[in-house]
Structures are given as structure tokens and as C-alpha cells.
Length: 592
Image (cartoon, rainbow, N blue to C red; front, side, top):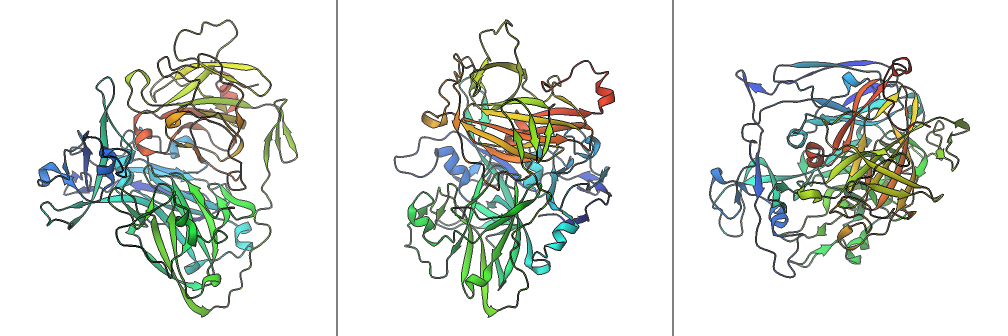
């Protein structure tokens, strides 16, 4: 992992035959690793690191299935995973292409099957990636390594003369665990060479069993754990991809040349000492999921947050660090010199040569002259650069915390706005207050993937997606088919444990309308870039705006935490030609 990197030119259509070759001697191959479930364990003693005992055990290195040998770190297999054989669907994440090329989750190819897809590549230069998207088992197939980079080039990018060749690095970051042999001597661990999918199990209030999305102790870059790269003292281009199943990374660059640790003592990412060697100006962002930014952007704190599925295009001038050793680190819930129960912050190391290098590249002031900022005015109009769009649609999606009527996973509800006088019922009523004081009232129109289709757009529509996070964990939300800009991000105050006061989990409703939200996290030049995936935090109301022009068919949107996507957080939508929509009974999306 990753698979082959595919490079194409903008505007040049490409056809790819995706063949499922996962068979041997005529038989479909099983997963190349075991999936185990850490059962409920006694509570952790006070002061022990870890969310709880189950989760702490799940992120410890090593372990195995119980049928592989005894030991305290042997766990039962997750039901049905031993019988799971290769069934794949390829999704080109971020591609503008028709629905039948998009990797519809039900369109599974069995071993020997071939799926031909056409990618028009009518979009600006950017970093895409392809990965498996098979219904209900995406998490297992991606964990097995079914992903890779897909790069679109164009003339605008070429004119910038960005670092290229050996100085352009494609870095796919993902976390993994490794299977260990049983009965190793105390204090030692012998790995078998196989991966291990180990996740924490729990039981809900109604007895339903669930699993916490998998995270793992070892950070891999392009399939290697904590690799080292020797670099020249000049500019490099880093194409970063968060290909993890669920881990949200906060990347930063640190000078570790003279760094020393006290044996047995960790430095957690919450400790101010963690950032003492961070080089806050080192990472210069030039692009996001959908293409180049209008101008280079250096994050104020030197940290780049990336949820699963996100890509960031970064430049680093290593000439400022001749002869030094740098380390790319993750500052989200990690530790330096990590101890059992903690996750090591290290991602990869760069050793900078001490010789001076002639480098023609200089950082340009302007990157993308075609970029225009999207705006949504108070009177309901869209302004795209200098163009006014007076007709657009809205889609409403609520992210709901786990525990609703005994559920064990978060849920994603497609919302329908109620008309005045319509019966509200006693449950599942979401009411929000807009900045102008108007109260909007919603009920779920759909909750599961196979529920009735409710979101339909005409090809060429502009649509504002409203994502309302009603509490629980952060979710990286991904919408297929086109690229978007974030136009608003508001925040309601949170209560203990990230709960949203005003949302009643018993009735799954807001008994009173949620108040007008306050200002949320600022929209930086990075988050204002063209994107298809965003991390939405609890209590946030996020609006993203996209142009559904250039493709038609059935598509999906979902949380990109793969365990959530495979369970209850994925839904379909359709984009149809305007002429066809004229004959369609229902016009989804609440056009106005």
C-alpha cells in the first residue's frame, strides 16, 4: 500500500478497467488479517491513560485471534469476518464523473470481475485518491490496502514550476496494528508479519453490541511504519493524504536534532513542552481536496488538521534546516515517547543534507487565478465571484449522537422541513433558530441507506448543504460528485462530554428551538479552499456550497470514519438532467 499512483492531464478522458484479482487457484481470497473484538473489561485504575479499558487494550500493539494461541491479548474474532472474501468497488474520491463511474457501494465486483470506469478529468489540477467503497465492508477492504493516489495535472500548475520529480512526495498516512505471536517472554513482543484489525467492543443499554471505530498504535506512511526520508536542502512538495479509518491527524513539523527524552516518561500532546520544537512556519499550504488555493497559506500555529479522506498540498523549504533532522508529527491525542495505552506522535522523519543546493523555485504570491470565493447573502442569493445566482437548493443533514433508543452508533438523519401547522409528533423533532429569528422545524425524512431517496437535484444546480452536529464524536463528512466551499461555520455551546444542551436524547428532539448559534471556528484560507471532505465538530452548524454541474446519476454522501460509513452514516442522492426532472414527481433539496 498504496496502490499505483495514476497521473492524468486535465481535460483528457481516461478509461480504467478495475479488475478484482483477489483470488488464488480459482478461490476468492479471505481478508489478509484477522478482525478481533476486545470485549468489555473492568474499569481502568485512576490515573491510567486511555479512554476506557476496552479502548486502551484495543490500541496497544500486538494481539491475535483466540484460535491463534492463548494470552491476555488474545481476543475473539468479530462475527462473520473469517468468512468474508474479496468483494470490491472502486471509488475515485473527489472525481467529477457520472454516477455509474463513481463506485456505487452496491455495485460489487467478485474475484475475476472487471468494472470499466470513465473519468473525464474536467477539473483543475489536484490530489485525488481511489479506494474501496463496498457496501458494509469498506473499512475492511481499505484496511487491507485497497487505495492509491490519482493526480490531475494542468497548465496552470505547470506554469508555477512547483517542486517535482524526486522533490514531489506522495504521502499516504494511515494507522495500523500488527499481529503478535503468543507466549512471548515477559516484556517482549514478536510480530508475525500480518496486520491485525483490533477494535474495542461495548454493549449498549438495550444489550446491542457495538464497536468503537478502529484506531491503531503504528502510523504508516505509504505502508511503512515511521519511515525516514533523506532530503536535499531545498523546496519539496508534500501531497498529504489521511487514509486512516477514523483517526483525525493534526500534522506539524518539529526539529528533533538534539531531542532527548527521560526513559519511561511520555510528553502528551496537551503538554506545552510537546510543541517546544515545532517549526510554526515550516508547512506552507498551497492546495486542498479540490485544487490549488488562490495564494500560499501558512497556518498560524503551524498545525494542519486532516480528517480521514482529506488531502492537503504542502510546500516545505528544507534549506532552512540544513544538516538538521525534522519529524512530521500528529498532535491529536498522541504523546512523544509514548507509553502503553498512548499513541506515538511520530509520523515520519526527514534528514536534511547539510550541503547547499541550487534551487530555482521561489514561492509565488499567486497560485490559482481562477479561484473565486463563494458567498451566501442574508437575502438568500449566492454570489460566485462577481456573478449573482438567484436560484439554489438546500439539503439538511443532522448528525445524531449514539444511544438514541438503544442505538450503539451515531446516526445521520436526512431532514425534511415541516410546513406551518404540520403535526410535529413527540419524537425526532429538530428545531433551529436562524440569525433573523426565524425558527426552522425538521423531522427525519430518512435515516438508513436503503430508506426512500429524498434528495434530488437537477444537473447544473447550486446547492447549500447544511450539516448540523447534535453531539457525539467529530465526523469527517464527505459528499460525492463535485467540490465545495465552506461558506459558514457556527457553533452552539457544548455541555459535559461534548453533549449539546437543548438536544434531548430520550426523545431525539430539541424540546425548545436551539438558539441562534454563535461564531464557530474561523474559516481559514485552507478550509475556504475547494473541498469535498470536512471535519465537523459537535455543536457545529456547517454550510458548504457546491455546483452540481458536469455529471449525472446516483451518488452518495457519508461520514468518512469508515466504521460509521459501514453502519448507519451513509445516504444516496441523485443528480438528473433538468429535462428529466421536469417529469419527476418529487423535487428534493428545498429549492427556492
